[in-house]
Length: 202
Image 1 (tube, rainbow, N blue to C red):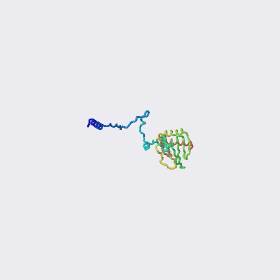
Image 2: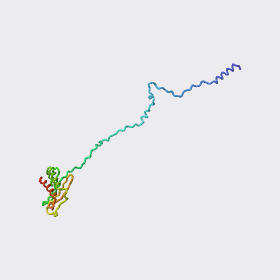
Image 3: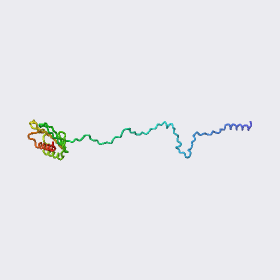
Image 4: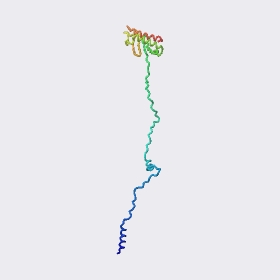
């Protein structure tokens, strides 16, 4: 074999054993797109699916409702007493007995009204009533006993019951005609009341 043939054989062997061109590496990293000018980063946020919004329940605001037909409670009011103030007579004079069997009661009020046994009303001045009350108090009526009765209560005698009321004291006394040693205060009280009744024809 010639030297030229040996050189050719070596050339082909070297060509067959030399490494080939390595393949170009392909990048697997995804290509990032830079935002365009004038576009804000928020515009690149992912869009929300409309079906998700439709499925999300929304809570309506609670609105206070007034009951129909109900009026607001009235303001507090001061309680008013239903008890009527009853005017009391200052002198109550009852007279009963005698031949005719009388039974009379007279009511004398501070304003001068005198109500008779049959309901008739006569009028005197308030000053006259005050004067009678002063006579009664001066006579010691409020210190008298509750009753002065005779030993013999028979035979058509008049009985008297006197009740006197003032803002500070009250007293009732029962007596009859013919009482032995009747106190002067009781005699003066009877006289003052009967004189006032006589002045108006009672």
